[in-house]
Image 1 (tube, each protein chain N blue to C red):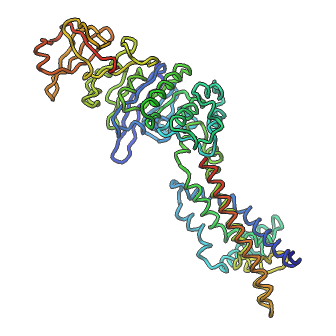
Image 2 (image 1 turned 90 degrees about the vertical axis):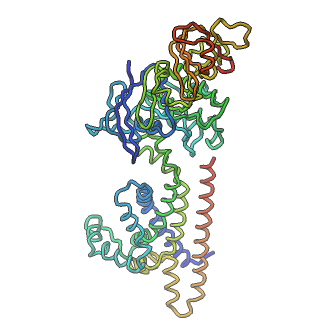
Length: 332
Length: 228
């Protein structure tokens, strides 16, 4: 079941990357952490661009073993890597960039025409890469990585340069590609919304160390993971299927922030909010700012809500009490 | 039309310069690539050796070549015994001396071409299953193309004008080693040769200018192609 196993160390000056984790075969893993946590470095090490101590095994095959002095070079490792910048070859057209990858993947199941149509870049193949927009470059880079038929695809925030709608569109393409081509992926991000919408597995990295790993929803509730989040980003992941107004086509889940959830002690009526979920209070936690973080268990999983101490007193919120969580469609 | 004697001088110059370029280009590309990579061991020493001909007097370079490649020199004797090849006082010898003298110029230009290449593209190629040699041929060489072309054309133009090392190692033999500058020197030795010297100088000047303009033109075109 486990596809990628790593227990590796790399020292770069003061910084020490010391990561031990596994990533599953059948899903997208989010590699989450603040900037400077070593996310990009970890991907470089996995792909073989940097030597490390310790071990990396892909599909049971050893890629690196520091103790045995083994370092399989990147071109023989079977990892694909999509960089933050597209890194297209400037002396080739978009189509030649794709052909470059396809030619070297003898066992590739994919054909250029098919992949180009899927990524909606069939019309760009004749263009020199200097003439492509940012979004187009990202899609060509992703298509190129897929055509190399990697056993495992690593993505280093390939949408970092995109904003708003183009970013959403790119994530949708990424999810569709994952479903269609069945390639396991690990995606670096420091954006919790992106992570929740893409990944079903989560690895959290802080100062070079893995502080939490496992299924997304479970890891998302761990205190050491929540500690990585900005105060206003604290929340929980919910499957999009249970939410009304969630974007069509979104995979995985949706990050619902505690600040966007109201609590009612009786079934709410006459509200404009589109999402009302019934649950029971599982935990109350006082925050340093004087607010309370309420965890409630619903059928869809845990939901977090942030309330004031005063509201908690008035509503008599306590463990085990049945409540209704209310979220505006706009928050999802 | 130029008289036959001047045509022969020009032909000798072209023969010497083109041989010098063809022989030295592969070495220059290899050395330039090694010099462009910070990880190359002994880079400073290699850099120093490459630039020696710039600093040494050309006559000394010619003399060193005679010591090494002359009939009694270690390499020269070996070449004669094994292949029956003479270098000293032949067109091939003139080409060798020219190649040594223009080598730093060639390496410098090609090296700039390699250094201008974004090294991150090699990482991108390696995760697309391209091995080191593959990356060199398909990424490094084409991207350094403008530098290689410019270096080759400038070195060719400079090769037409090499003097000191050539006359020392290959002598001044009409039809074999007498290139343009050597011919100018020869006619200046004779009384009343100034007019002929001026004619040859004009030819030399024209060839050099054509070379420099061609280098600039080719480099611009190649850059434009790369920029898309």
